[in-house]
Amino acid sequence: MARAAAAPDTVGTMTEITDAIAALVGGTPLVELAQVAPEYGVRFFAKLEGQNPTGSVKDRIVLRMLQRARELGALAPGQAIVEASTGNTGLAVAMLGRRLGHPVEICVPESVYPEIGRLLRAHHATVRWVPRQAGIKSALEVAARVAREEGAFFLDQFGNEENVRTHYETTAHEILEALPRVDAFVAGIGTGGTITGVGRRLKEANPHCRVVGVEPRLGVHLQGLTSLEEGFIPPLLDESLLDGKLLVGNRHAVSHARRVLGSEGLFVGISSGAVMHAAMRVASRLGSGNVVLIFADGGAKYLSTEIWEAADPEAAYDPEDPIDDVLWW
Image (cartoon, rainbow, N blue to C red; front, side, top):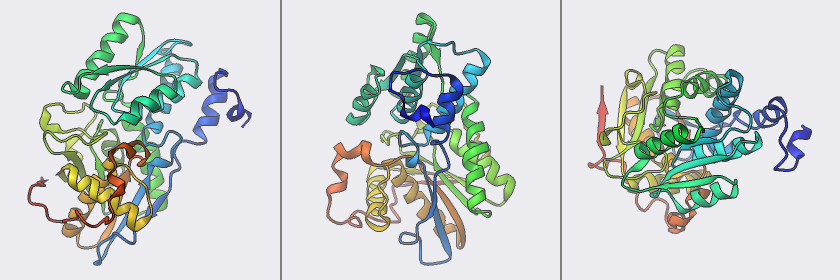
């Protein structure tokens, strides 16, 4: 535990650092959302991933990826790390990479919220901005080019199998320990790692568990989520695991994030609002049972949007918006 008190620029051994950080990553609470759950026999349980050290679910995968890369010799001591991110993964790489003594460069689309750049710089990461029109796909291309040309290690959250493995072995395990029966699982589609890893293990435990993915409608920007309609299918996403998919717009994502804050006192991110909206639609089809939601991060990174200042968290809530499309297989 002495490692946690060391000066920020002090570089220790892999074992010392990972022992200190690993104690803080994962083990997040699964809490019941009694105030926002439907009145009929459906119970909502949210996995609060904002409780991780940098405030998101991405700490889990970055810790595992760096551990494995170091063990396999793919990441040498002091070697630069480059990654493409819209925020959360970049912050996790910046924090963990610096602790391990690696320079970190994050390729970031200009469409991200202003706090993302500030937080990355606070962690001493170099930020390489990518035009907003290009999005995450081009940011990935830039990161891969930097790795080739400058000899950096490309973490590649969208293609690294440790992403899926981490969620299968840790996130899903924690959920099942806390709640042995899960009837539906709702999560955002970003890299595809969370919904694939967790969804696979939950279906092994209960073959009747419904796995529902959440993505933004075409042309809508929801931080951390990927629109498959834009033509980029995350390589890690196993679509055969999905029983349904819901496309969510900004209005519902924001209104439900505010609703969770007002009703449950949980300050969650905007993608969590989208997941909350999808869960309400899932509940109307499920009838009864336990629904687990992934709340991927907290709301502090989105304060510049001023969405939290509206007086009535229920004002924009409409559970049956006809422009949200539910696609069921």
